[in-house]
Image 1: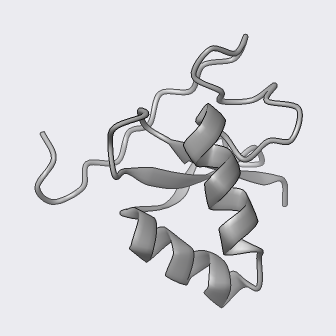
Image 2 (image 1 turned 60 degrees about the vertical axis):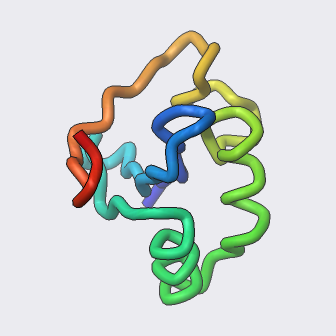
Length: 83
């Protein structure tokens, strides 16, 4: 299933795992929570989160979900403590 880690904004501790199959989030949480979920799925948490921290997306080509990319993504999860 094609999925990417998206970061809501450069200064927000809000991440989502976004599935292009269902075109929606399959997980949302803080950086630590997202790292734990990526590890649980057997994915490279460090690499994916570092890429999302730099560009807003773990997509290597930055063509999906990047802050300044052609395909912005609106995240619909609300995390506790965020308004």
